[in-house]
Image (cartoon, one colour):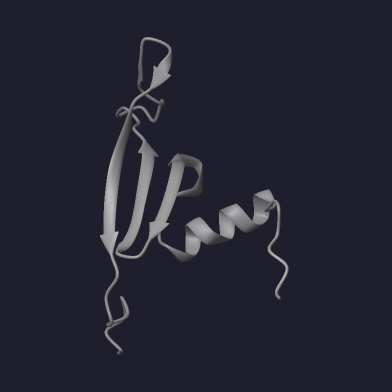
Length: 75
């Protein structure tokens, strides 16, 4: 049986976000399931500051379903 890691490094997290086309500094949470990827991203204002509501950061959720065609057009 293949050993499953118990942790990932910051560099691995950054590389995973970049591979998915997501800005690592804004990714709050990633969920991968049988239908695709869901990413919770921090929201910034026009000046680049993270928007908060009370004590919590404001987030938005992006859903990316799986597809058989790559983003570059090749199957």
